[in-house]
Image 1: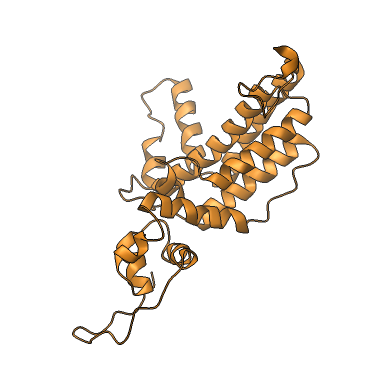
Image 2: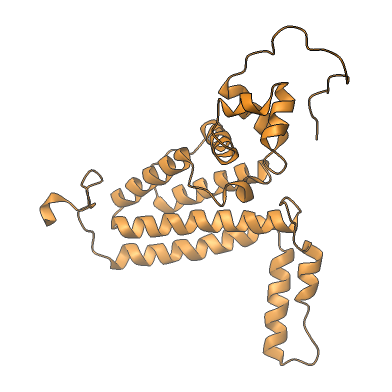
Length: 243
């Protein structure tokens, strides 16, 4: 992975270090990559001290969340309009592609709060599903499950593909562990074979099957749940008409 050239040992600094901005810090994070980035690496790339970086971001977790917000802002998200299933699938695909383009981001952000721009997208989708006749709690359930599934799927792939600080087993090892055993009952052999095939199936294909299952369940919720008034501005989320 390319890094900024080091200054020859013993060569003195000439003049003041160049001033940097928060945008410079975030650009350096994206250039280095979420898998390997640290505050000292960002400082080295920008030819400043770590203390200078901390003037722009309070800690590594915030630095990574802000860098991800930058990525989210640059994604050409689909319009939130029309068929709710198509909208959620389109957003899931965009999110999956963005996570795939930035290996390590899922692992890096998994222990922190949801970045602000990601939260904004979730809220916009929820408002759309309510317009599509979902009760708001059901809308949030479906959206949260879709997003969790995409993130969990990418997290598993990052572990299999070695994009985590402590990589797990490889994809080949995982598939091998599910090979059917000749001494097992036929049903267990079929179950093992199905899981082995899932491991080696193209990732997007397996993800799409999961998402279809979730959206089918969402359709049932939409068909069977009475729509309740919901006011996003009310303190407890209920419409004043129900209080």
